Amino acid sequence: MKKDIILKELTKEAVKEILKYIIGINVEKIEFLNIEFPNIQIKKADILVKASQKIIHIEFQSKNDSSMLFRELRYFCEIQNLYPQYEIFQYVLYIGKEKLNMQHKLNKHNINYFYDIIDIKKLDCEEFFRIDTPEALVLAVLCDFKDKNEREIIKKILSRLLKITKNENEFRKYLLMLEELSTSRDLKNIIKEEEMGLMDIRWEDLPSYEIGLEKGIKDGMEQGLQQGLQKGKIESAKIMIRDFRLSIDEVSKKLDIPLDLLKKELNG
Image (tube, rainbow, N blue to C red; front, side, top):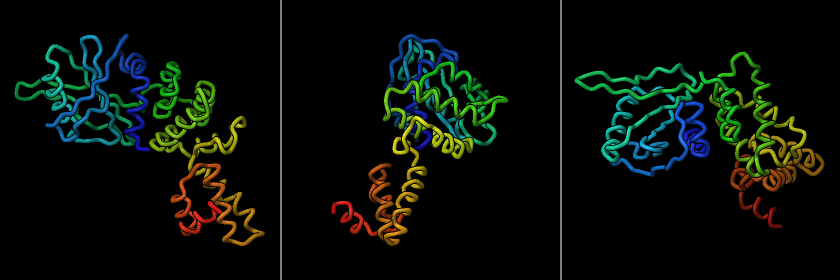
């Protein structure tokens, strides 16, 4: 899952709370706008909503981009042309590892323009715990932990997700999102370790690809020691596909088993 797709989904689900607690705009009702901008290279805005007499435009950025100022200005002109009676607010949410280094103001040739840029790494993670939705909890992994221990924050996120998600599938979805976003802070190994420590969750409920892979190989190979290497690999494959929901193609490539043979064993 790509980070920008994850961020769009999370923000859409919790946009009113994020606007209120992170950006500082309190709105009761919003309407998502699905508009294409043919004059801009990136034809769709990440998040575009209408609220009262405001148009709120949010973009996500994982790297410093020297063209961001003019890209945002082009969006501004397109949006203002479509909604001349609305006031436009633009925000870029930066999640990159590098130090933020993008221009956000233009004062030149009688043009006085700016957009707001928010470095998520500098936001207090407690603000996201305050929102206390699955979406906000996942976003908390990108924020400033202050002087708090990283592992303790991860434990807090996981325990709250476990309590407030509605079912196993929803928990799995947000856990996958958390794993992907955590790579921006090199926290994925800690998350994997804490996942394995969740005593109330069965192995097969854990969504991590790596955990499923490692456990599938381990269990299968233990059986295969007595039955021969090839049969052990087949047993590994069955466990990975059955219990960890990995695709046949993925397992075939990972364990170097011919696809036709693997399909035959599964159907046999």
